[in-house]
Length: 360
Ligand code: ADP
Ligand code: MG
Image (cartoon, rainbow, N blue to C red; front, side):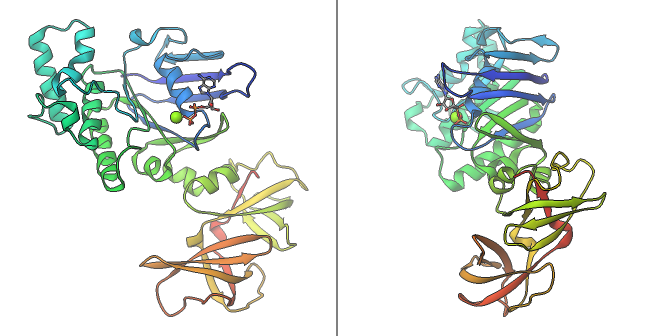
């Protein structure tokens, strides 16, 4: 077990824009840490640099105190799990799981015992003699996990390991991976483009876009206090309204939205918009569940008025879409008699303490 530190790490291929552009990460010992972002943002490249398959163009990488920037993969003591399992299909489960132990020349008797333990951990006791192509996708992914865990890696690396599973199995398997990780307290770096998966599994999440790090925080921090409009939109659903900063004091920002409306937004210590100056671009984020439909057509200060373009019924609540100037607003309304109808003109009131200013 160990911490993993990336210090100003960049990877650039040929003349293209950097795949990973100078990122700093400090993954703590025993932490379940997730890289989250859309396809192509540099997640796998980052993970491969930690594994040693890709050498950074610049920057340093440390496991604990040890500088591993140019150490080859087989000397790093990492276990890896991939999206496509990468198992040997014609060999049996036990042979697949034993692979890393054979590479390390572990004795046959110890091998047998450790393979049995690893299969027990992933819930596949008794499957040792099955061939891989006789297993379901979910079982194959658990074999891949057992193969990574059997060597007691100091760092466990998982690259979109659930992407090939159907929705229900994905949820089951993510809970399983999380509980195995907690039991072993292995420092883990997990890669996904699925924000719900990242929120459910992680101690902390790093949100990436186009090779850059937008924010690192707990699931609650990135949801409640997104640093940028990208993070606000990517994590859950959010209304992000573009505007200009008119002024700020210790407690509030005053923001003029692009339609002229003024909003008073709480200011806090460590606000992600502290660097934004007066008359510069800023954005305001508010979650759909923090917008309350107040009345048809109210024009009270601080309310936002628009025409309903869609109502989506999801059971316990409805999601109402309003056309608001050039943009749209989503509001969650509890199921009941107050659900507005399409084409109705309604006003919504933001919960004042839930308005949040973000970098545009
Ligand atoms: P993600 O895993 O977030 O989908 P990747 O890390 O795989 O993204 O890729 C990030 C960017 O780097 C992409 O634009 C991709 O095309 C580019 N890239 C990745 N590997 C290579 C490579 N070996 N050669 C050239 N470009 C690459
Ligand atoms: Mg990838």
